[in-house]
Image (cartoon, rainbow, N blue to C red; front, top):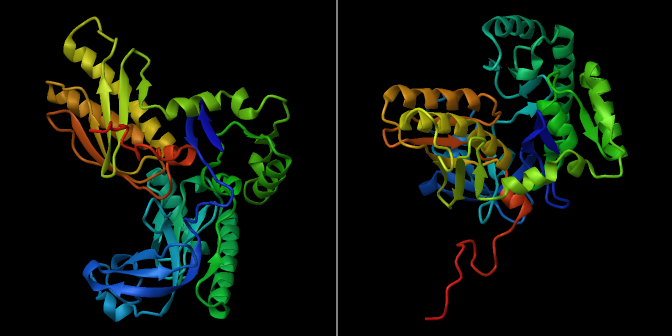
Length: 395
């Protein structure tokens, strides 16, 4: 599935047959071993590799948030534990787990173990205050709720309907946990097209093109239940030319798989990923400006900000990211670039943290990584050079 804004590819979602993402799935697992030195445990959830559960991700009823419990007092080898996947297996690492369970719906996220209420910070203060009043009307006192951004302008009846459905799902998870033996799956996230509809589809999207009759029917049926006003925006694509070709998506995917990305003015950004971090270098290229070097550099850096954030979303780059902007002499220009970066990152649904822009023009940031990126989805490590990009000659 591809998300386009003004014809420009912004995000791509990939699900491989036989290798779907398990983020959000809930399992009844069995503790294989507890490692006090790592403050973590390995848990068997029925996959090829054991999953990792850190002590900070273990819910202990009645404990204070700042308290760090002793993992040996919480988990024992052979113990059964209900866990949720927060990060897919990647490379040689197994999945990442938590026992803080959550069930997402279109408008709300149910937190069955706590009683806190959170409202999306992307909503305005007035709308947040209105939604908090609505939530107080519909929420049982013994459960927690997060109100999602898509709940903007939602009525009490819509939130109540969403909460009723999530409570029903939670009761089923609880029943499954009581009767199934570990390792077993208790809850599975919906298929890709419904998950994307649930998480991002709102009135800002003009249409949804579906090139399979099955997806077309499933999406329409889902939106009829949760967002009837959006049903008419779902269109069955039936042209002979594949939809990804017709919408120029295939070419844009190919561009996103390349190391260098051109900027409109003639500059470029170069993206290199390593085991530890991703480095993004900004270059002026052919752009020479017409005023001064500082003005040329500032314009290139500001232009690069938009493309950098687009590439982060499109390639789903996670972990530590270093952006090497072109050096700027004036502090006000460095502040302008950092401000532009933070504003552009507001479009990104994935959690990010940005450190101050240094005098060398470097920005350190992190972006939450929960699943494989675009490169991993469409490629594999070269069996000859093993990802180093060099084939060595015999000495």
